[in-house]
Length: 243
Figure 1 (cartoon, helix red, strand yellow):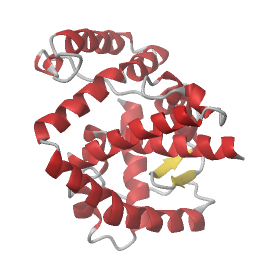
Figure 2 (cartoon, helix red, strand yellow; figure 1 turned 60 degrees about the vertical axis):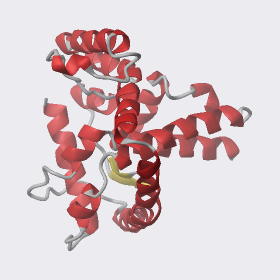
Figure 3 (cartoon, rainbow, N blue to C red; figure 1 turned 30 degrees about the vertical axis):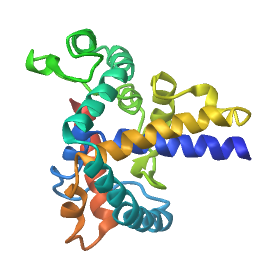
């Protein structure tokens, strides 16, 4: 039972942190258009969890991020974000290769080499000014590339909208990510699990601190919060898969 709890907490933390990457966050709450219906057998559970996540975000996560932002200067928080983007290069590289996007994989390799050296271990991002773009791909997109359907919609605690395919993808990406110690999934090594969760929590709070107010602006006039977030997620993922 303890092992399942640790695995669940790691999945939630890893996926939540990944979903709130700076560029992803901007896309999530700026490109929503026409609602799209999708298979949703867990609608009652999903609606309840959406309300829970909404409360936690507004009353716990956002205030924590604001406090963090008052202590840590923006230049330092941007450096932390850049460092995390750089160190998680293997996820993007591997999934670009798996999707046969070899030119994007080489672009990611070039970014990593430049930012790790000239960019001082990734704290700065000179690669972008050299027109080397970050090519974000994850295993959920890889599964879609090979024809896997999204499955049913699923809202994770503390995370938000997802689906069955992307949830499996997040677990696979966790094995590639340098920020995740896969051995920490063993309940006999709780200190490693705590270390992994701690790193992911810092990453999450840092990302939210760089995007304060966006979630509130997007959701403040929502008539149906669940449908709004669900459709925004589905449309963003559909766009990412097609790119």
